[in-house]
Length: 271
Image 1 (cartoon, rainbow, N blue to C red):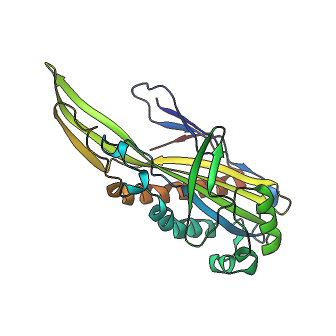
Image 2 (image 1 turned 60 degrees about the vertical axis):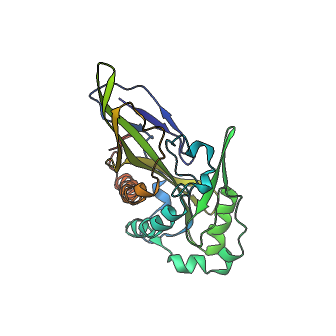
């Protein structure tokens, strides 16, 4: 079984051991929700929608010597832009808070004058450049979340962080030293939500990760040369957005279930 342990917001994935017959799972912890902070009459605003800049995945030999910005489809900006409406629509469907209209947030004087944080996620000794969705700003400082909640006149604010990657899998048959088969590639999307109240206290935190069905494949004939050719990141954009939409729905379903008093598992199926 492949086990992924995901730290909320940091989106670090640790790969465990594989045991045949088990479905890929993610250990994310149960949704952490302060139920008293939410309610149908409570007003919330989405103030940050961001993603890691790089569409992570196996690169071909030639791509390894090319800057990421020069590899078509490796920049996630189009992906997070396309996810933006889906995220707002999903959040807007919850019956446990009222979402301030997106246009009202983005055009407000408070948001326009707000100084965003450096578009860089730093975790331990690692750092990752970030992209933000259409007209949003990058927010990571809890004090700034609290300030926005107060300046926008809402009960709380929400930040969404996503990560896009490609998972390869190989199926081949070895006969007398010769290989026959194929290598397939699947888009994976992880998403984390965090919400703060006016005092800068975390009132919602959860994550999920989902993997799409294989969306690209390369033939392996005689000798496995699939690692020599480049990964087609652009070809996997549609499935990354599609599986990202599923991840958003699951994240909100986990929030709604928690608010309704239902038990939400700390272990999630990736598929």
